[in-house]
Length: 160
Image (tube, rainbow, N blue to C red; front, side, top):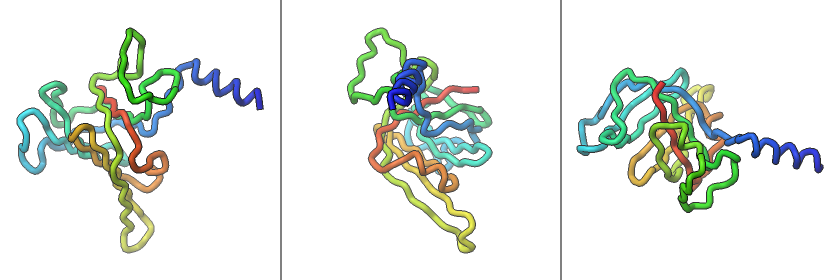
């Protein structure tokens, strides 16, 4: 038992932050339903297996069609993997956010599962809100295993 506990402590010291989701997307469309807001763009993006819609404050972080970017969802920004306290105090310490260009904090508010007629391919849609900026991920049901309703999330993006 002590050996297992020391391994967990060692992992935290090494800076192991569990990624709930990590994938690279290509922007396929900007504002598919027309421009609704001056400073926000809704992007549609695809990876090999996933589809995503994401609202981005493009005045702060511009995105263009055919641009590739990496998306990571985590429950904490602490490099040692310790849980987020709910309070932000940068205080000169390094966090996972330092490794990315664009970071949002929000809450997962809906998980919906949809099964096709042949029942062989179920899809899940995961919805989160980041202060009113919305995200929807669509994939097979295995993606939903890391998520739960009302879960607090950090979304981190960097261009590749």
